[in-house]
Length: 354
Image (cartoon, rainbow, N blue to C red; front, side):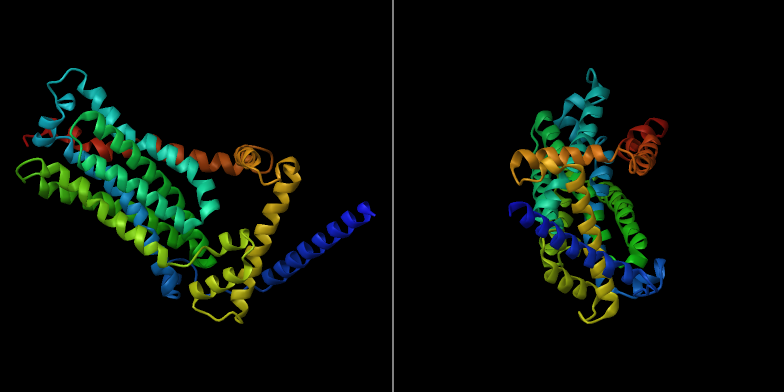
Protein backbone atom coordinates (compact mmCIF):
# COMPACT_ATOMS: atom_id res chain seq x y z
CA UNK A 1 0.00 0.00 0.00
CA UNK A 2 2.82 2.41 0.87
CA UNK A 3 4.54 1.60 -2.42
CA UNK A 4 1.34 2.32 -4.32
CA UNK A 5 0.91 5.65 -2.54
CA UNK A 6 4.48 6.66 -3.38
CA UNK A 7 3.93 5.73 -7.01
CA UNK A 8 0.69 7.75 -7.13
CA UNK A 9 2.44 10.77 -5.63
CA UNK A 10 5.30 10.45 -8.10
CA UNK A 11 2.84 10.21 -11.00
CA UNK A 12 0.93 13.25 -9.74
CA UNK A 13 4.14 15.25 -9.43
CA UNK A 14 5.28 14.19 -12.88
CA UNK A 15 1.89 15.12 -14.28
CA UNK A 16 2.06 18.61 -12.76
CA UNK A 17 5.58 19.17 -14.07
CA UNK A 18 4.58 17.83 -17.47
CA UNK A 19 1.72 20.35 -17.58
CA UNK A 20 4.13 23.19 -16.85
CA UNK A 21 6.61 22.03 -19.50
CA UNK A 22 3.86 21.56 -22.11
CA UNK A 23 2.56 25.05 -21.44
CA UNK A 24 6.14 26.33 -21.61
CA UNK A 25 6.66 24.63 -24.97
CA UNK A 26 3.45 26.15 -26.31
CA UNK A 27 4.60 29.55 -25.06
CA UNK A 28 7.76 29.33 -27.15
CA UNK A 29 5.86 28.72 -30.37
CA UNK A 30 5.41 31.89 -32.44
CA UNK A 31 6.73 33.95 -29.57
CA UNK A 32 6.01 37.68 -29.64
CA UNK A 33 7.87 40.41 -27.79
CA UNK A 34 6.85 43.33 -25.62
CA UNK A 35 8.72 45.77 -27.82
CA UNK A 36 11.70 46.19 -30.14
CA UNK A 37 14.94 44.46 -29.09
CA UNK A 38 18.09 46.16 -27.85
CA UNK A 39 18.40 49.83 -26.99
CA UNK A 40 15.08 50.77 -28.61
CA UNK A 41 13.31 48.41 -26.22
CA UNK A 42 14.28 50.60 -23.26
CA UNK A 43 11.62 53.10 -24.30
CA UNK A 44 8.84 50.56 -24.78
CA UNK A 45 8.63 49.72 -21.06
CA UNK A 46 9.39 52.81 -19.02
CA UNK A 47 8.57 51.25 -15.65
CA UNK A 48 10.93 48.28 -16.01
CA UNK A 49 13.63 50.62 -17.33
CA UNK A 50 13.26 52.94 -14.34
CA UNK A 51 13.38 49.98 -11.92
CA UNK A 52 16.55 48.69 -13.59
CA UNK A 53 18.14 52.15 -13.61
CA UNK A 54 17.37 52.56 -9.91
CA UNK A 55 18.85 49.14 -9.04
CA UNK A 56 21.95 50.14 -11.03
CA UNK A 57 22.75 52.68 -8.31
CA UNK A 58 24.55 49.72 -6.75
CA UNK A 59 27.05 49.98 -9.61
CA UNK A 60 27.46 53.69 -8.99
CA UNK A 61 28.35 52.98 -5.36
CA UNK A 62 30.97 50.49 -6.53
CA UNK A 63 32.47 52.94 -9.03
CA UNK A 64 32.48 55.84 -6.58
CA UNK A 65 34.36 53.88 -3.94
CA UNK A 66 36.98 52.86 -6.50
CA UNK A 67 37.50 56.40 -7.74
CA UNK A 68 37.42 58.26 -4.44
CA UNK A 69 40.58 56.71 -2.98
CA UNK A 70 42.69 57.72 -5.97
CA UNK A 71 42.84 61.43 -5.10
CA UNK A 72 42.53 60.95 -1.34
CA UNK A 73 45.81 59.02 -1.30
CA UNK A 74 47.75 62.18 -2.22
CA UNK A 75 45.89 64.71 -0.08
CA UNK A 76 48.29 66.32 2.47
CA UNK A 77 45.70 66.20 5.27
CA UNK A 78 45.16 62.49 4.66
CA UNK A 79 48.90 61.77 4.70
CA UNK A 80 49.30 63.77 7.92
CA UNK A 81 46.65 61.66 9.62
CA UNK A 82 47.92 58.34 8.23
CA UNK A 83 51.69 58.82 8.17
CA UNK A 84 52.17 55.12 7.44
CA UNK A 85 51.18 55.69 3.79
CA UNK A 86 53.19 58.89 3.28
CA UNK A 87 56.12 58.83 0.87
CA UNK A 88 58.66 59.32 3.66
CA UNK A 89 57.42 56.32 5.67
CA UNK A 90 59.16 52.97 5.51
CA UNK A 91 57.16 50.43 3.49
CA UNK A 92 54.64 53.05 2.37
CA UNK A 93 54.00 51.22 -0.90
CA UNK A 94 52.94 48.06 0.92
CA UNK A 95 50.56 49.87 3.26
CA UNK A 96 49.00 51.82 0.40
CA UNK A 97 48.53 48.60 -1.54
CA UNK A 98 47.00 46.88 1.47
CA UNK A 99 44.57 49.72 2.04
CA UNK A 100 43.36 49.74 -1.56
CA UNK A 101 43.30 45.93 -1.77
CA UNK A 102 40.97 45.65 1.22
CA UNK A 103 38.06 46.87 -0.88
CA UNK A 104 38.66 44.08 -3.42
CA UNK A 105 39.09 41.42 -0.74
CA UNK A 106 35.87 42.49 0.91
CA UNK A 107 34.11 42.51 -2.47
CA UNK A 108 35.21 38.91 -3.03
CA UNK A 109 33.77 37.83 0.32
CA UNK A 110 30.54 39.71 -0.27
CA UNK A 111 29.98 38.45 -3.80
CA UNK A 112 30.57 34.79 -2.89
CA UNK A 113 28.06 34.91 -0.04
CA UNK A 114 25.40 37.04 -1.69
CA UNK A 115 24.03 34.14 -3.75
CA UNK A 116 22.48 32.22 -0.87
CA UNK A 117 21.43 35.46 0.85
CA UNK A 118 19.55 36.60 -2.28
CA UNK A 119 17.87 33.18 -2.54
CA UNK A 120 16.93 33.25 1.13
CA UNK A 121 15.54 36.74 1.71
CA UNK A 122 14.86 37.90 -1.90
CA UNK A 123 16.84 40.01 -4.32
CA UNK A 124 15.61 43.38 -3.13
CA UNK A 125 15.98 42.71 0.60
CA UNK A 126 19.49 41.40 -0.01
CA UNK A 127 20.20 44.77 -1.64
CA UNK A 128 19.01 46.42 1.59
CA UNK A 129 21.34 44.15 3.57
CA UNK A 130 24.24 45.05 1.30
CA UNK A 131 23.53 48.77 1.76
CA UNK A 132 23.56 48.38 5.55
CA UNK A 133 26.96 46.63 5.43
CA UNK A 134 28.29 49.26 3.02
CA UNK A 135 27.01 52.08 5.25
CA UNK A 136 28.83 50.65 8.27
CA UNK A 137 32.06 50.53 6.26
CA UNK A 138 31.58 54.08 4.98
CA UNK A 139 30.98 55.42 8.47
CA UNK A 140 34.14 53.74 9.74
CA UNK A 141 36.16 55.20 6.87
CA UNK A 142 34.76 58.67 7.47
CA UNK A 143 35.45 58.54 11.20
CA UNK A 144 38.87 56.82 10.92
CA UNK A 145 41.44 58.03 13.44
CA UNK A 146 44.16 55.48 12.65
CA UNK A 147 45.28 53.20 9.86
CA UNK A 148 43.77 50.03 11.33
CA UNK A 149 40.33 51.60 11.58
CA UNK A 150 40.55 52.79 8.00
CA UNK A 151 41.55 49.36 6.69
CA UNK A 152 38.76 47.62 8.60
CA UNK A 153 36.28 50.18 7.30
CA UNK A 154 37.39 49.55 3.74
CA UNK A 155 37.12 45.79 4.22
CA UNK A 156 33.56 46.05 5.56
CA UNK A 157 32.63 48.56 2.87
CA UNK A 158 34.09 46.20 0.28
CA UNK A 159 31.86 43.37 1.51
CA UNK A 160 28.83 45.57 0.93
CA UNK A 161 30.09 46.59 -2.50
CA UNK A 162 30.70 42.97 -3.47
CA UNK A 163 27.17 42.07 -2.41
CA UNK A 164 25.75 44.92 -4.48
CA UNK A 165 27.87 44.12 -7.52
CA UNK A 166 26.47 40.58 -7.51
CA UNK A 167 22.79 41.11 -6.67
CA UNK A 168 22.07 44.34 -8.59
CA UNK A 169 22.71 42.76 -12.04
CA UNK A 170 20.79 39.67 -10.89
CA UNK A 171 17.76 41.74 -9.95
CA UNK A 172 17.97 43.76 -13.17
CA UNK A 173 18.13 40.61 -15.32
CA UNK A 174 15.13 39.05 -13.58
CA UNK A 175 12.83 42.06 -13.91
CA UNK A 176 13.82 43.01 -17.47
CA UNK A 177 11.79 42.13 -20.58
CA UNK A 178 13.58 39.32 -22.48
CA UNK A 179 14.22 41.39 -25.60
CA UNK A 180 15.90 44.28 -23.75
CA UNK A 181 17.60 42.41 -20.91
CA UNK A 182 21.10 42.92 -22.29
CA UNK A 183 20.56 46.62 -22.86
CA UNK A 184 19.29 47.09 -19.30
CA UNK A 185 22.23 45.19 -17.85
CA UNK A 186 24.54 47.70 -19.54
CA UNK A 187 23.14 50.27 -17.10
CA UNK A 188 25.10 48.54 -14.33
CA UNK A 189 28.42 49.06 -16.12
CA UNK A 190 27.44 52.59 -17.13
CA UNK A 191 26.67 53.47 -13.53
CA UNK A 192 30.06 52.11 -12.39
CA UNK A 193 31.86 54.45 -14.77
CA UNK A 194 29.55 57.30 -13.77
CA UNK A 195 30.39 56.69 -10.11
CA UNK A 196 34.11 56.84 -10.85
CA UNK A 197 33.70 60.16 -12.69
CA UNK A 198 31.62 61.64 -9.87
CA UNK A 199 34.24 60.57 -7.32
CA UNK A 200 37.04 62.21 -9.33
CA UNK A 201 35.22 65.55 -9.51
CA UNK A 202 34.14 65.54 -5.87
CA UNK A 203 37.66 64.83 -4.62
CA UNK A 204 38.98 67.42 -7.06
CA UNK A 205 36.81 69.99 -5.31
CA UNK A 206 37.29 68.87 -1.70
CA UNK A 207 41.09 68.77 -1.93
CA UNK A 208 41.07 72.57 -1.57
CA UNK A 209 39.20 72.40 1.75
CA UNK A 210 41.11 73.13 4.93
CA UNK A 211 41.33 70.43 7.55
CA UNK A 212 40.55 66.74 7.45
CA UNK A 213 37.14 67.19 5.86
CA UNK A 214 39.03 67.40 2.60
CA UNK A 215 39.18 63.58 2.67
CA UNK A 216 36.47 62.73 5.19
CA UNK A 217 33.71 64.43 3.17
CA UNK A 218 34.19 62.27 0.04
CA UNK A 219 33.95 59.14 2.20
CA UNK A 220 30.78 60.53 3.79
CA UNK A 221 29.16 61.51 0.50
CA UNK A 222 29.20 57.92 -0.73
CA UNK A 223 26.55 57.18 1.89
CA UNK A 224 24.00 59.25 -0.03
CA UNK A 225 23.48 56.97 -3.07
CA UNK A 226 23.68 53.93 -0.78
CA UNK A 227 20.91 55.18 1.48
CA UNK A 228 18.77 56.23 -1.49
CA UNK A 229 19.16 52.74 -2.97
CA UNK A 230 18.48 50.95 0.33
CA UNK A 231 15.26 52.87 0.98
CA UNK A 232 13.97 53.09 -2.58
CA UNK A 233 14.47 49.41 -3.48
CA UNK A 234 11.87 48.45 -0.85
CA UNK A 235 9.16 50.04 -2.99
CA UNK A 236 10.13 48.18 -6.19
CA UNK A 237 8.53 44.83 -7.14
CA UNK A 238 9.95 41.50 -6.08
CA UNK A 239 11.72 39.43 -8.71
CA UNK A 240 9.07 37.21 -10.35
CA UNK A 241 11.56 34.37 -10.59
CA UNK A 242 12.36 34.53 -6.88
CA UNK A 243 8.67 34.50 -6.00
CA UNK A 244 8.08 31.42 -8.16
CA UNK A 245 11.08 29.68 -6.61
CA UNK A 246 9.33 30.14 -3.25
CA UNK A 247 6.03 28.73 -4.55
CA UNK A 248 4.34 32.15 -4.70
CA UNK A 249 3.18 31.84 -8.30
CA UNK A 250 0.21 34.21 -8.11
CA UNK A 251 2.30 36.93 -6.50
CA UNK A 252 4.86 36.41 -9.26
CA UNK A 253 2.16 36.96 -11.87
CA UNK A 254 1.08 40.19 -10.19
CA UNK A 255 4.69 41.36 -9.99
CA UNK A 256 5.16 40.55 -13.66
CA UNK A 257 2.01 42.49 -14.54
CA UNK A 258 3.30 45.51 -12.64
CA UNK A 259 6.71 45.32 -14.31
CA UNK A 260 5.22 44.98 -17.80
CA UNK A 261 2.36 47.42 -17.10
CA UNK A 262 -0.08 44.90 -18.58
CA UNK A 263 -3.08 42.96 -17.17
CA UNK A 264 -2.85 39.35 -16.04
CA UNK A 265 -4.99 38.32 -19.00
CA UNK A 266 -2.35 39.49 -21.49
CA UNK A 267 -0.99 36.60 -23.57
CA UNK A 268 2.62 37.83 -23.48
CA UNK A 269 2.59 38.10 -19.69
CA UNK A 270 1.20 34.59 -19.37
CA UNK A 271 3.79 33.20 -21.76
CA UNK A 272 6.62 34.77 -19.78
CA UNK A 273 5.06 33.53 -16.54
CA UNK A 274 4.95 29.95 -17.85
CA UNK A 275 8.50 30.34 -19.11
CA UNK A 276 9.80 31.31 -15.66
CA UNK A 277 7.79 28.57 -13.94
CA UNK A 278 9.19 25.94 -16.31
CA UNK A 279 12.77 27.13 -15.76
CA UNK A 280 12.37 27.07 -11.97
CA UNK A 281 10.72 23.64 -12.07
CA UNK A 282 13.55 22.31 -14.24
CA UNK A 283 16.15 23.72 -11.85
CA UNK A 284 14.48 22.08 -8.85
CA UNK A 285 14.11 18.73 -10.61
CA UNK A 286 17.76 18.83 -11.66
CA UNK A 287 18.79 19.51 -8.07
CA UNK A 288 16.73 16.53 -6.88
CA UNK A 289 18.25 14.22 -9.49
CA UNK A 290 21.83 15.31 -8.82
CA UNK A 291 21.65 15.59 -5.04
CA UNK A 292 18.72 13.50 -3.74
CA UNK A 293 20.40 12.99 -0.37
CA UNK A 294 20.48 16.77 0.31
CA UNK A 295 16.81 17.61 -0.17
CA UNK A 296 15.80 17.55 3.50
CA UNK A 297 15.52 21.14 4.72
CA UNK A 298 18.17 21.15 7.42
CA UNK A 299 20.90 23.71 7.95
CA UNK A 300 23.59 21.11 7.29
CA UNK A 301 21.97 19.98 4.05
CA UNK A 302 21.45 23.55 2.87
CA UNK A 303 25.14 24.28 3.39
CA UNK A 304 26.14 21.11 1.54
CA UNK A 305 23.69 21.87 -1.28
CA UNK A 306 25.09 25.38 -1.66
CA UNK A 307 28.62 23.98 -1.97
CA UNK A 308 27.41 21.25 -4.34
CA UNK A 309 25.73 23.84 -6.57
CA UNK A 310 29.09 25.61 -6.93
CA UNK A 311 30.84 22.38 -7.87
CA UNK A 312 28.11 21.64 -10.43
CA UNK A 313 29.33 24.65 -12.40
CA UNK A 314 32.52 22.74 -13.20
CA UNK A 315 30.87 19.46 -14.18
CA UNK A 316 29.97 18.16 -17.61
CA UNK A 317 27.25 20.18 -19.30
CA UNK A 318 28.13 23.44 -17.57
CA UNK A 319 31.89 23.74 -17.32
CA UNK A 320 32.32 25.37 -20.73
CA UNK A 321 29.99 28.24 -19.83
CA UNK A 322 31.65 28.51 -16.43
CA UNK A 323 35.10 28.79 -17.99
CA UNK A 324 33.90 31.41 -20.46
CA UNK A 325 32.40 33.50 -17.67
CA UNK A 326 35.48 33.19 -15.47
CA UNK A 327 37.81 33.84 -18.41
CA UNK A 328 36.02 37.03 -19.47
CA UNK A 329 36.11 38.50 -15.98
CA UNK A 330 39.65 37.29 -15.27
CA UNK A 331 41.15 38.90 -18.36
CA UNK A 332 39.10 42.05 -17.84
CA UNK A 333 40.58 42.48 -14.36
CA UNK A 334 43.92 41.25 -15.71
CA UNK A 335 44.23 44.52 -17.62
CA UNK A 336 44.77 46.11 -14.16
CA UNK A 337 41.96 48.57 -14.83
CA UNK A 338 40.96 48.63 -11.15
CA UNK A 339 44.52 49.38 -10.08
CA UNK A 340 44.66 52.23 -12.59
CA UNK A 341 41.42 53.73 -11.28
CA UNK A 342 42.51 53.50 -7.64
CA UNK A 343 46.18 54.48 -8.01
CA UNK A 344 46.19 56.67 -11.11
CA UNK A 345 47.00 59.84 -9.16
CA UNK A 346 50.11 58.19 -7.71
CA UNK A 347 51.16 57.26 -11.25
CA UNK A 348 50.53 60.70 -12.76
CA UNK A 349 51.83 63.06 -10.08
CA UNK A 350 55.50 61.96 -10.17
CA UNK A 351 55.52 62.76 -13.91
CA UNK A 352 54.01 66.22 -13.47
CA UNK A 353 54.71 69.45 -11.68
CA UNK A 354 51.40 69.41 -9.77
